[in-house]
Length: 127
Image (cartoon, rainbow, N blue to C red; front, side, top):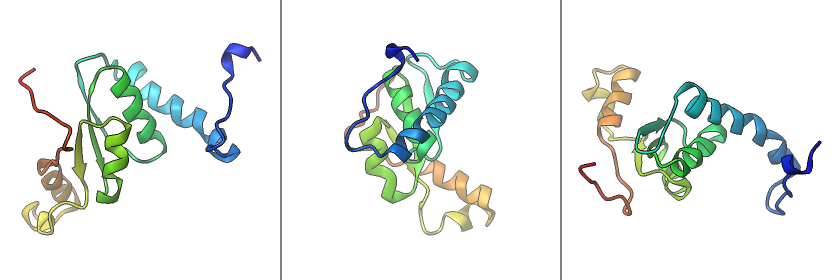
C-alpha cells in the first residue's frame, strides 16, 4: 500500500464507518462521473441525500460545481444543505400529495417533487 493512498482516520469516525466509506464513495463517484459524466454547471438529482451513497454524491457534485437537487425526509434537510445541496425536495411533502398524484406512490412522489423547498441560502439565477 502506497502512503499516497492512505489518510488518517478522524477521531469522530468509527472503524466501522471508515470501512463503509470506500464502497459508498466509489458508488457515488461512478454514478456521477463515470456513468453520468457530470461536469461543472450541470444539475444533478441525488435521491436519499443524507444516506451513505447520497451524502457522498452531494458533496462530490457540489465540489465539481454542479447544481445539486437533493431528496430526503424533512428531518434530513439540514444535513443535505450542509453537505452542499442547493435545492431540497422534501419527501414528507404536502399532506394531500398522494390524492393530487392520483393516489399512487409514483404520483405522490411526482407531486412532492413538484413542491420543491429551497434552502434559505439558495438564490435562483437565470444561468
